[in-house]
Image 1: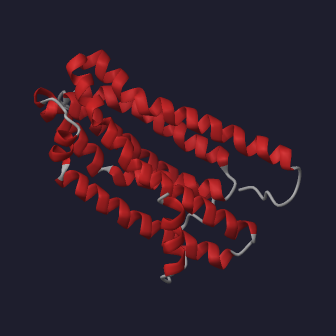
Image 2: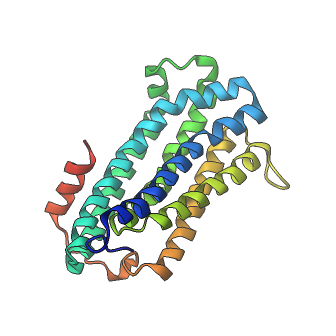
Image 3: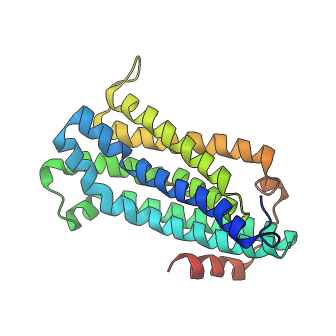
Length: 245
């Protein structure tokens, strides 16, 4: 955590902005890992199936990223004012409001998966492959939500370096797990296109667990036992007013 209310503004911009740029580069690379492995291991038809789901897969996390940015803004305001009581209330309300929204859009996307593929004119011959990939990704979207929420919270507290550590971990896990689940290994059977989705989901889940354990030891605000769980509709409204646009 870093207090930006004191010291050189230029130095703070460099110290905070550089890790953010690295984080954005990692996210860009993370987004194409699946296509690289699917193309190398399964061929052009599988690449077409995965690519066909991208408009939907990019749209859904966009909402979560927006809510994460809203969390970032609200936490930064409370942290800058050194209002710990408000900060604990923002943490709990932003987390559960965003989690509820994530579960809602995941459920809708799972139920309407094939229909959405038809809406975007995915060819019938790759629809089944695309649907298997899409269903797994959106059903496990909660892990992506938690990563977005954690990184948004850390940015709000001025800790961009830990954000980079989490994104590096996510990228490394994805590089390892995706080909493993596509090809299979030992008792794990080859899962093809679905394996790419399972690898991505497992990478996100592992990052959530390890990231949370790490933050418990290094960040006093991440511990949910210390949050203020009183419902605050103003905070919830602000999360969506800031995050949705």
